[in-house]
Length: 356
Image (cartoon, rainbow, N blue to C red; front, side, top):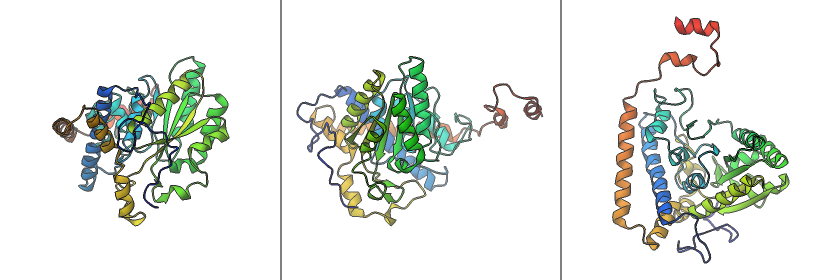
C-alpha cells in the first residue's frame, strides 16, 4: 500500500496547516479541545506502558490504538452519558472519557480483584456497566447486532439513549455486520456505526477487503446514510458523530461513519507489521498523526505551548504510575466469585459447592 493520498471528499474541520477550515466552528470550545487533546495523550502514553508490560510478561495481551486515538476519544466526547457504547478492540479509552477510574481499567488487564469482569475476560476486553460500555467478544462484529437491539429497545421505550457501535474495516466482511445494518435500517434504530478504517484488518489491506469505493457507501444498501471522515482530524470525527447522534435521537435512524485513519502500531502484541507493510508507508502516515495535528491546532489557537504540554505529559505519567502501583498490589479475584453472575437466584447445587 502506498503513502496516504486521501480524497478531498473526506469530511474535515482542520486544513492542511491544522487551522480551522473557513466556516468551521467546532462544537467544542477551546478548553474542550484541550481536554480532548489530554485524553488522546493519556491514551497514547497508556498504550506505550501497557505494550511494554506485555513485552515483560506482566500482562498477557494488548491491542494498541497508536495513531488512531482520535476516533474513539472524539466519538466519546460527542455522545451523552446515558448512551451505550459497543466497543471493538481499540476503544478502551472511551471508558476513561466516560469517567471510569484508570485503576479500574488497568485491573482488567491484570484480571485482579478490582476487575469488573472478575478475571474472566481476555485482556483488552474491558467494559463498565457504570459507564454504559458493553463487554465485547473477539468474534468479529458480534457487538453490532447487540447495539441495534439495545437501540431498538430504547426507541420502543421512548428513551433518548442511542447506541454508539465501533467496528474495524475487517468487520464489514462478517455476516453480523450486514445483519446489523439491515436490521438497523428496517427498524430505523438510533445507532451510530463508527467504522475505523485503519487500512488493515490484521495484515489484509483495505483494498482487498472490499471492491466498493468506500466502506461508508455500504450504508446505502440498507436504506440509510454513510459518510467518510478524516479519522486523523479529531474535530471532524467529533462533528460527524455529534450530527449523526442528533439525527438518531430525533428519529432519523442510523448512520454509518467511515473514519479513515492508520494503525501506527501492530495489530496486537502478537503481531509484526513489518511483515506486510513498509517503513515508508508508516512514516508517511505518521506525518498525519492525529495527536500532533490537534496539538498544532491548539498552538495556533493560543491554548497550548511547550511548557503546558510538558506539564500535561508529566501529570499523565504520574497518574499512570499511581494506577499501576495500585493494581500491582491487588490480589486475584476471590475464588467465591466463580459462583457470581451465573443465575439471578443461585440453585441448590451451586449453593452447596459455594458453601463447601
